[in-house]
Image: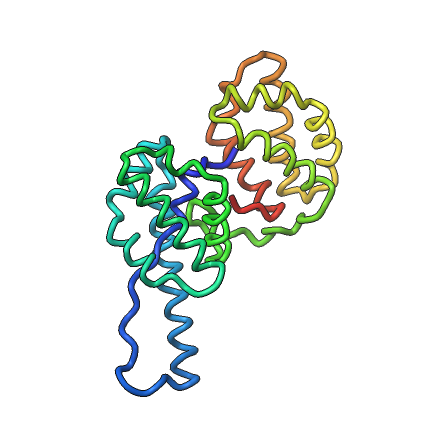
Length: 233
């Protein structure tokens, strides 16, 4: 499992840009430099907020991070870029501010915001923890394995805790069997992690014990496999 939406919202941040020249329009060179600078500032702030929430283990903990980031959220809203990315930024800010205002992290529980946060991270070339995307990011996108993985992720990400994940896996063991059959087709670096996920899921089902599903190792393996499949969420 990846982080819940609450932690995915850590993808939101932007530092304020310097004022434009007062009179004439910028030259092409100046505009290009300004655009590059804007993107660098955007991604630097996004990275900082990702890292601030990377080790948070609860919704309340991440809400506390957002409460300490009110000025950054204001800057983010003010300097949002044009197009869909800008729309995503404003949606993320709105969700974050609503959660802070109500002191209720559940206000962040919106799959659309989760997707928007992932889009911002991908734009900046980082994962949800602010780490650079791996060289094999999206290398498996469109494969049978990644299609099966996506079906499993959809179900497990909808669960609110490890017990819910176990319930989904117990009810969809055919997906695990299919996933397992496709593991040998993977590059060796991903193959080992995918096999660990299979073995852990099977053991959890056999023992009816969800405790092993939420360990840091399993979360990291799951994240790496999802990134290989192009799922930065």
